[in-house]
Structures are given as C-alpha cells and as structure tokens.
Amino acid sequence: MEAEHLKRLEAKEADHIPAILGEFNTKNADLLVFDSFRTDNLWHELWLAIFGILEDQRLSHLHTQCLNTVRILTRDEFSLQTNYIEQEVNTLLKLARIEAGSLKLPATPDELKQQEREEPQQEPSQAQSEVIAEALKCLCNLVYQSSDCRRQCLRQHCLDAILKRVASSMRHPCALEYYDMKLLFLLTALEPAARSRLQIDLNGLTYMTKWLDDKLGEESVGEEQLNIICELLKVMFNVTSAPDKSPNEYEIQSLHLTGVLRELLLRFGDLATDKDRAVVTHAINLLTNISGSCLTELTLRCSNAELESHKEKEQENEKEKDTEAGASAKPRECCSQCFEKRNVRSLDVLLGYLRQSLAQQEAEASSHELLSPVLTVLVKCARSDRVMRHYLRQEILPPLRDVSQRPEVGLELRNHLCRFLTLPAMILRDLSAELLFVLCKENVGRMIKYTGYGNAAGLFAKRGILDCRRVEGTDYSSDSEDSDTEEYKQQQQGINPVLGCVEPRSKSHLDDISEEQKEYEAMQLVNLIEQLRQGGIVKPAMIDKDGRPQPLEHILQLQEELPQQQLDQKRKT
Image (cartoon, rainbow, N blue to C red; front, side, top):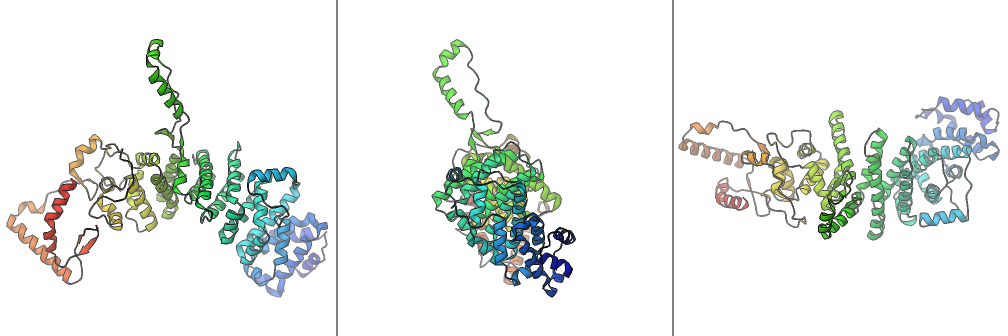
C-alpha cells in the first residue's frame, strides 16, 4: 500500500476510503505471506488506521469493507503475536455483538423465551447483520491464530452471548448463524476451559440440542442450513468428548440428544448429496461420544406394535364371536423397516453409510481411519441392546450358504470386515474384530465359522483364547436359533476351520510312501526343528491353561501333550 493511501486512511477521508480499501481487498484476497508488510511497520500502521475507522460511528457505512481488510490482516500469525491487539479484539467483539452483556443466560431454553418476552431485543437490520458476520470472520481467524485472543474471548463471556443469540427466537441470516457456530467450534476445539464452561456453567448441550431439533423441524433445509447443522454437530462433538457433568444428568441429556440424532439420520439417511453425507458423518462422530446405554433411542417401538398386540389379545378372547361374525379385520401393517417390533431404520442408515464408505475407500484408496467412527457406533449398538444386535447380525452375518470361498473374499460386509482382521492398521483391525465377535455373542466356535481361525487368531491371542475355550463373564441371551442352512450342512464336513471354507482335496505326497518312510521323515522333521530351536531361530510353543502360548524346552514335549489335546477336542465336539 502506498504511503499516500495510508495517510488518507489515517485521516479518515471518507471520499477516498472505499476506493483504497476496494483495491487493497481485491489485490490481496488470497494473500497468505505478509513479508512485505513487515517492512517499515506497515502491517501495524494499517491495522491501527482501519480500527480508527471502525471505532468511528459516523463511518459505519464503511465498516463492512474495513472488516474485510481486517480479515486479510488477521492471517498474519507473526504480526498478531508481536503486536498488542487487546483493544482491537474488544472492538471486534462489540461489532459482532458478543461482548459481555448485562442479561444472564438462563438455565433452560424455556426460561430464555420468558426473558425475551419480558425484555425484547431489537432485531438487527440487514446492513448490521453483514457487519456482525464480517466481524465474526475476523474473530475466527484471531481465535485460530492466537491463544491470547482465545482467552480474551472467554474473559469477555462471548460463549454466553453466542449461545444466547443461537437459542433466541429471533431469526438471523444464515451467514451469521454459520459463523457463530464456526467461532464456537474453534473455541471449544482449542480451549478446554471453553468446553467445560459451555457444558457445565451454561448448560450448552441442552440449548444446542433444542436448536438442532428446531432446525430438523423445518420443512425444507437448504445447503446453507446444512452447513450450519454440520458446524453445530462439530461443536456438540467437542463438548461431549470429555463430559464433566454427573453421570445421571449427562445420561438424561444424552438420551434426548440421541433421539434428535435418530431423526437426523432418518431425514438425511438416503445420502443423496455430498452435504447429506457430511451431515450423517458428523452425526456418527457425535454418536461415538454417547454412552451405549443411551443408543437404544436409535430404535423405537414400531408405531403399530402395541396396537397389534392389543388386537391379538382381543382376537384370542373373542375368537368364537369372530368366527360367527366372519373373518376378523386384518391388523394394520407395521412400518417398512420393522424388526422384532422395533423400527430399525436408523441402523439401516448406519449400515448403508458403512457400505458406501467401504466402496469409496476401495475406489479412492482413502484412509482406513475414516471407517472407525461408524464401526465404533455399531459395536456400541451391538453391545447395548439385544434387538439391535440381532438385526446387525442378520445384515452382517447372514446364514452361510456358499462356503467355497474364503471369508475375506467378496463384497459383502462380512467379507470386508474379515479382510480388516489382518490389517496392520490397529484401530480398524480391533474394531472389526470386536464387532464380529460381539455379533457372534463372543462364541469362539461361531467366530471361527464366520471368519476362519486364521483371520481370528489375532483376536484370540489378544484375549487369551487361542485354545478355543469359552469366554467367561459374557452376558448374552440364550435364545439363538440354529442358523445353519441346508447348503452349509451338506458342506460342513469338508470345511477347513483355519481357512473358513471348503478346501479342494489335492493328492498328498505321503500317499505313495510306506509307513516306515513316513516315520523316518517325521523324525527328520523333529530333528530339524530342534536344530532351529537351539539356534534361536524359532521357538516352539504350546497353549497353556490360560490360553496363551508358552515356549517349550524340547520339541518332543508336543508329543507328550498330544493325548490330552485329543481328549479336550473330543469333549468340545
């Protein structure tokens, strides 16, 4: 910027300011490197000149353009750290109307409505809303760049003001709501104290849940509204990541929140657009912070389940009368996605999201960690509720029919999860193993049936059940039905349990040699293994009573344990 232009800004020459700032903002719209502004103290002088205009109410018609310039200057982290800007931050808070107010934020949304009726607030004009939005953009940059600015915002109680504006019944432009949420997200992400204050002191989760519910109640939700919902879900994720409230109080809030998230999944679960998918992604991320006991709210009792049950009783009591009068009326059909008298549409959305993510991950070779949130939620659902576990097992582990291919070969959910069992990515591997094991009711034999012992060996070793013993302390219902199909039973004897599929029989090289030669070759093998053991190359082991491998002193110890292993196997079968 030329020295003459800077002097005119400092002199507040209103006739020249629009042209000067217009040229500067256009030229530097994408500027990220400010080395040229640090010579001759240009950055600081321009900063003070712009805020001199912003503090002059007679030049309020120029404030939007000035704030655009401030937004560009706030990208320079070095200058923000080396200059004292506390007064300027207070000016921005005032322009954004989130400075400390005289009215205290009530404890509940209902009390806030009562306060608004008693002391109504004036709705800002369109020009004022533009100034507020631009000031919020500047504050977002400052909060992201400077820890001092974050602490100053908290001292000025800007959390209270933002939450109060969000929860008020007054309508605000979408841009203003969006940047309110953006600023709130940055504060809660970068300042732990902001999360605690928002959750405990301000009861923010209740306010935000109510606001999200109101957003979902609107008939049409445009792209701008979807962006606001995404930012709101991100703020709620930050707040719930480390709950500081008492367990009972937090569980009540979580139950309500889970119910609202269920409605969100039902509304955007078709994943028709990228924005719909983004909303569902953030909702799933938020569900990972909800305790398993609250996830039962994802499935509701079907609308006609109670009616059908009542009608069945009436039909039993009045069977003779119904026979004389003619056929009784048929009960109404239940909802389209009813499973054991529960609406499981939200679970179907989660599974659809998982399938789409798996297809995208294979097509684009994207990060495996993108799948971990939805797998975490599915594990919690399967552990927390019998009906949800039954439905997920039906969809992920349907009765086996074709066992000619290995479990990890194919495009079904079971195939994908079995492939993950041998991944080096620990998070995804452990979550996949946990989900499959819970769907198998932590039954080792059933796990081997669906995945093969080779794929599940890592899980068994981690849990100390390599000897295929029953897992102690599990609490599952005992009403499992026999899921073996006729096709499976016909091929069951030929299944290799290690591979999890029927292994084609090939001609053995031992068929053409005598028993004496077989015995000789076996002893040669023993001697070779013993040499490898003595050289420290391999370490033979056997499974001890705790289900964990223990090293052997001599290879022939395996022969000593063979009768006991054969006896144990007979008892299991």
